[in-house]
Length: 312
Ligand SMILES: NC(=O)c1ccc[n+]([C@@H]2O[C@H](COP(=O)([O-])OP(=O)(O)OC[C@H]3O[C@@H](n4cnc5c(N)ncnc54)[C@H](OP(=O)(O)O)[C@@H]3O)[C@@H](O)[C@H]2O)c1
Image (cartoon, rainbow, N blue to C red):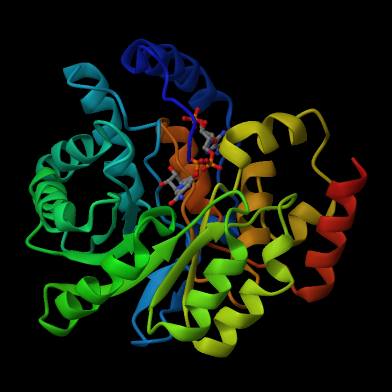
């Protein structure tokens, strides 16, 4: 990921929260199916452990520096996430202050026992990997991470043996590798074919569907869990879709808006374990967690949703 975070993230976030407060009032109430049905989970193939199909990303949205108001606002997002049945939070040393923001939020919540912590190692000099992971762990305030991913394949040949040894020693529960926006898919495919990884993280959404061709079927074949990043194309997909009325079929899958349509499309692919939308807004995290409840599109409706969205 090469994009540079905003110059003044805290003030950007303040403006967003003001908009978010207005949005809270305007959002439709959860449908009955969403509010009463259980959170849908998927099993991690290598262990059988179930995780909710919607998690929480933290890139940019949680990079708010040390501003106490901004940090507390993020803590409210995390609180609402857990209250709605969320568990899996994803971060990286690449995401500025996001790790310490997560730590602040988790401490406020008394470290929820249901947390599934997903981190990354992101350093070319593999000798610095152990120290980086330890710093990340201290930022979160967790005894160990559930999942450690090699970020953007950086130094994967050197990092993976150490991560697998840490898993064998009980210092991690799962090992994975991440990429995004279609980068280095051929190399990722090779890793998936040859390395004993538990998770792969990649970009998949209504418009970025290349992974349907090879990587998602391969994940099923190799029994690798799939975490979907950028389900909203960093928000641009929702900006684009929000100009169009919600089609009638959205009701058939209990969606109250395009965000839920996009998430249900991603997580209803049979290879996908979960998606990790990022948000700075309590209203949005509730809406996103709503996509983990109610009816999911079957293969025929998925095809129709993709066709209709492509035609907009
Ligand atoms: N290589 C990698 O490992 C890699 C690369 C990219 C991403 N990731 C991970 O994947 C996560 C998600 O990707 P992303 O952050 O690039 O983008 P994303 O989740 O596709 O989109 C985030 C944007 O969508 C908006 N949003 C969220 N929920 C919404 C809702 N219900 N309605 C309207 N807008 C909504 C957010 O704005 P508001 O704040 O206003 O809600 C934010 O601007 C990252 O945070 C990170 O954890 C990993």
